[in-house]
Length: 274
Image (cartoon, one colour):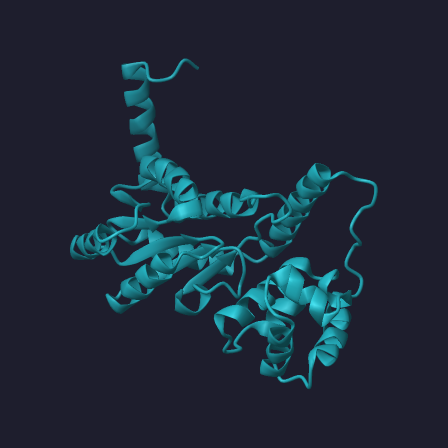
């Protein structure tokens, strides 16, 4: 993820189609800076006039002017390695995502702010629908070992908002929302409902220009891999575990007590083989 490109599109009021274009530019960085409007449109799955309107929405006379700015912002980014098959390129892209995530974590202000919000919430709702449901369950499984009353909201339908209301009534003050492409409408609406109910929202999502970004109090972006038929979520999973570590660091004594209690119970019940 190129920080310059992110800053270019942050704060702009974009339509859903324009958000897709913005995400495409953020995701593909140096490559997108040398594509024509038609090629960007094909890459983002939109029409060519949409790309032109997107450039104008950012204040440029047209896409050529925006492309010149993109080349300036992405100049010096490493070129894509040659001579690799599709699977190798996909894994290499994930490696690059993790490298950039590591660089992003040079400053932990947002991660620590998110951890403080979530640690203070009892119960702690964790929202993740569709593609994000397994990651929400993964986070919730480990978070429940360290924190009491973690509630994973991984099913949609008419009961989702009921469960959110129940968490708020029980004392929840914040919610973790994991929002991954293709951005389920139900997830975004649930985040808005949570905000309206007074909950602070921490979002783990793929991009700083994700549709959920404008509704979240803290956004923790981690790019997803898009080179295979289905997305790779290595980055968001790493970010989720980094966040959980920060939560444990924010409340070391109670977390340690709960972990020791769990280990004692696990040993007594012979839960694990090793």
